Image 1 (tube, rainbow, N blue to C red):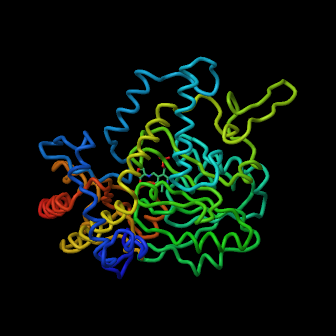
Image 2: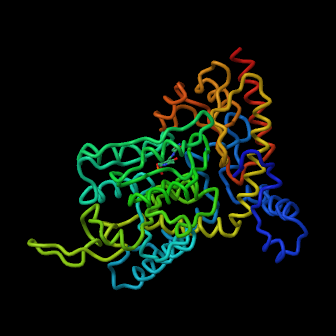
Image 3: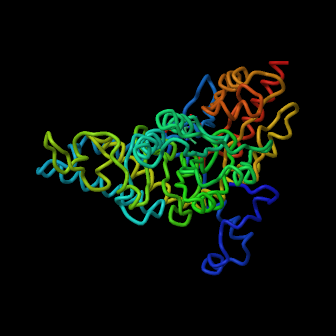
Length: 441
Ligand code: 7TS
């Protein structure tokens, strides 16, 4: 993560207390050590998929915003689970089922610790961020929202954090309000103040923009929403892969993310919610596991977290997510943040040197995600030429069409980095863009 106006070497990823404990002289020295503590070449060896050629060139994978790659530890955990441990969970008396249940529940504990939730039962497993937000929009729709109420999102949201709320508005007669984004890709807090009022019931915003990399000033957004008695939902899909998240410190009411963007498998995700709020909400899906007693007259629901987890979950996915969390924690978020901040500064500097390249958004705080346009060329033409050189980027609207409308463009080329990307890969990207520029004329 980079804060605008600061050189990456001067940002305090490491606190002065850590400086004392680590016995290093200055913050600057400590941060240099943090950058070095993470050796991307060693890390790359953990990700088998990275070691291959695409279209005759070594793969340069810069589409981590869409989905990150998986370390061998995650892949092995899933194979081991199916080879030796698979059984359905929460229902069998037999040993295998008991062991699978225990291991799956251990992952809930790992997620709790990762985001510093107060209780394990505040962690609900879902299929991903999209399902987590749909769950909330559906369950909050029951009692919390009625005609004339207002729901606030921002202009930079992924469609997953727009459409579920639109559906809820259609059903309830509530209104959707939008916090505008300025030319640099920052949400306009002054306009947010004006949108907030005693009709605001829900504020739902991203932690990090998947298109621009903007890191939103969540504490301020959350505090202001709470002052109006509104609930706050955070879409953390693009944050958890890059930065440590503390839901208690943020004081958000709900926080959603996907395993597959944080080095875990697809098809599993998380909804965090404050215990009292989750207890109040009605269930989302009905079925097995979410009940405590069923009769044709009346069904009693199970306690948290099971109330929101109907049916057989993605057990193997959960195991893989647990391994991904272990992997992240072994690297350490402070090292990841320092490394990626340095990489981002390098990439921004190099990209800015390309003639005709226009960055879309230069937000005050930015995660390792960069959107750009090359002259008047269509992003997909640029993306296709990069692909011919083994460079994987995403092109298009990135499921943020309203944001594209805001900038008056159809799409961008997006390079989204992870801790296994290197400065050499940035150089390859830059050379690839130069080639696209000369080919497209
Ligand atoms: N929210 C944000 C901020 C996202 O970036 C994405 C996926 C989602 C929600 C949906 O996550 P899912 O795991 O439920 O699909 N973003 C992207 C992207 O930027 N490119 O491909 C998917």
